[in-house]
Amino acid sequence: MKVLLIEDNLQISKNIVRYLALQNITCEMVLDWKDWLSKALSNFYDVIILDINLPFISGIDILKKLREEQKNTQIIMLTSNSTKEDIVCWLNLWADDYMTKPFDFEEFLARLNTLNRRNLKNKANIIYIKNFEIDLEKIQVKQNDEIIKLSPLEFNLFKYLAQNKNKAITRKELYEKVWWEFDW
Image 1 (cartoon, rainbow, N blue to C red):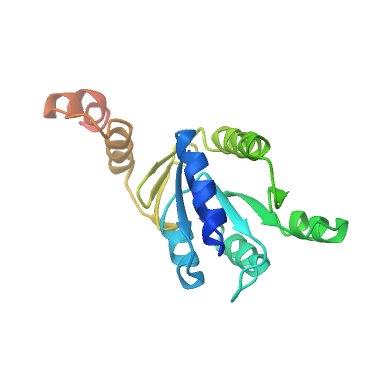
Image 2: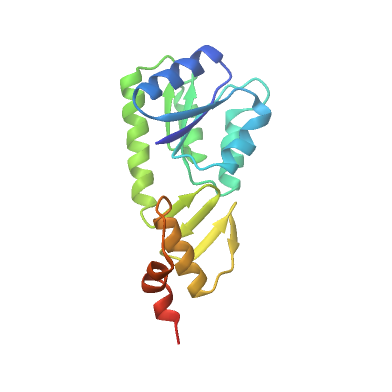
């Protein structure tokens, strides 16, 4: 699981990153509010942990911006506010979950795992490599959320290479697995 943490409190951030590292979860943290958007949009994350009360920009504004940008990443809100009205507001703005500070790390991990399972179920037909998204159901490739026009042969070639990204592939294998059906 790959997680992005947007939190201004250095001590809380370090504790979360350390705990998640012990659980073999990669967690990148953003402390500078200016970096959050580029980081969140330029990389693929399974879950984003987002603090509500940031000093220069509201976590709510970040949540709205991520959803406007069609970022479907699961988002868990962290907050010291926990009124019913706040919770209803965040969930209606498409937050996927929330936790109040201070929180129990076991419960926090359970919630992250739940969001990640939901994510995996939704993305079973999508391959992510760096800033590329290969949708096997829609038969399309996106780079930075922009659709790349590909012929059927190009799509199948791209898909095959992505599915075998850590493997050396021979010309013969490419021909047998991809090219043969387009060879007239």
